[in-house]
Length: 312
View 1 (cartoon, rainbow, N blue to C red):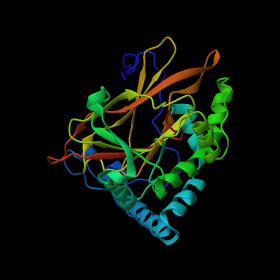
View 2: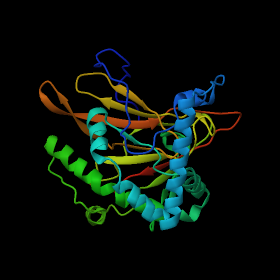
View 3: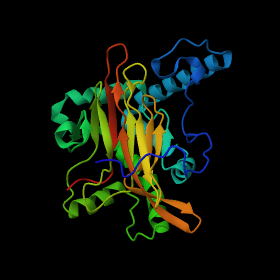
């Protein structure tokens, strides 16, 4: 599980416009509201920045209250249905990933991270250093999945299947994906892919995750998601989510994806279509996590990974 080529931070890469996340959730406070990455001196927030932060906090609290009223799982399904899926598709097509800010609330993120200490929820635990995968560890959930994870997996699959089918059409790949996740899982299970793949990852100071792909068997859904459950600059520093893409006859290109607690990133499992001078071509993708550093002597980073195919 290593990078498939040297990183190229400029040579041969086309000019890039400043990254925009898909407009799918309340905006985060602006950078003027405090020091970046938990380091440096304080910066006095502007009146606009203070108002934006207060407005975002108010909307986040309203979201949390609404989910408590209807139940977390039902709230997740409603939230996913209300996302701007055209904007998400556009980001995936243009850049290879899309960020959904505030997919989980702060309380939901904390509760999800706390599940790591409940071994009865998991089917297996992997210590990455023992396999050359990096440093840190992760655990795969067992069936039946916790209700919120099941709700996320089911709700996200449908709109992502539409994007995945379009990608396979562009790449002239025969496989197509049914609109309902249960039908796709039945296909996996019939091929002997019966083990659930959603997982929780845990990193401490000095830990990292090598660049890799989450394949697991013959049947592979082309997209997956990860939700950061810890707060950068407070719970840890460093630990950025990293994507690389290997373009034909060119060196690899890297993307560092900015996430805050509760944010979700959607990205390819193994490849995506891209347009070039001669039409559409296939770009190989890998993902990983850079080295985690401590904040005030502590470092703990948790992530929820949502993979839609099961493992053999």
